[in-house]
Image (cartoon, rainbow, N blue to C red; front, top):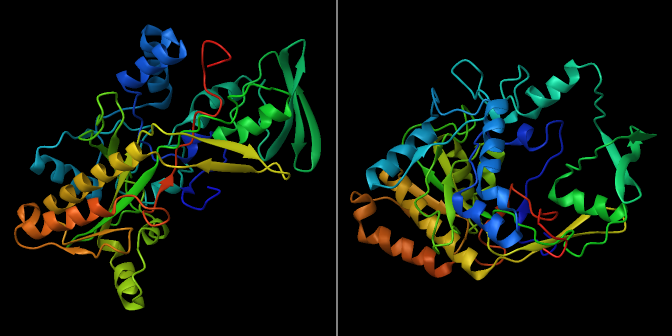
Length: 386
């Protein structure tokens, strides 16, 4: 973000989000669908139209919950929730995630196509017709508009200009680039680039006696909704696990001034697991373009969203201790690591540590806030004013 407080994970690839995600495929909640219908006039979102669309996506992406094999971190997450009596479930999976013998690192892609995604269904079907051409590494300059209708695009493909004419033009350049493209194409609606939602995340780390190897297996096969609705309107947090590539694990380490402590923590990566506290944000930001046509993102966390993230962090710490963690670490360097004692979640020292975390709260530049979901800058609505 422009103020340096939020780290964004975003990528560009054939297949878009379905190519760079972590397999987990959750339907929008009934509160989200009702809000779309009531606040933005999209009546179909709360009814059979949306249900039919979701069914079609499930079929195309081979979304399933049967036969899902949990990696050690996901098994620990499941175990911790069950011991605490927290609601927990198998996260529906896109395609066919890693199985023994796949070589791990499934979050870095499958050459064999097991991820499925858009490239393994609708784009593949289109290619099979012989009438569909893919231009990867293409930069679209603007959309061609005639008599108020989009009729094609012009751009540059590997240094050469191109033009495509079409009856229908679909922009899928993501929440950062699509607003810039629409403005270059002459659209003037004030909502373009505004209403950015990012599902802000903070991560908390647990160290276990046995290897976790978060970089192997399907990364996100369990989800807990224990704090999903904290305000009665469907705003809160989901608890999940990310792909734990060692580089990502290193980003969760805090600097407390002792290089040996940092080295010790880095060497624990094989035995570490990281939990994501993913917030459905009520606040919003905006995206603007600079003179180089690059996106500039402005986003400030709302107080209620900060509170929801903290509540999720407290639940996550309890889950990992209940699952057998021996040490818990959070991003803020003011908070010392917690070494788990014999009483686990029932210990007074643990409650005191949680109270310290809650007291610190989400602070600028200290809480490890990140985002892998960016949306809302070209939102649907029944009228242009919405």
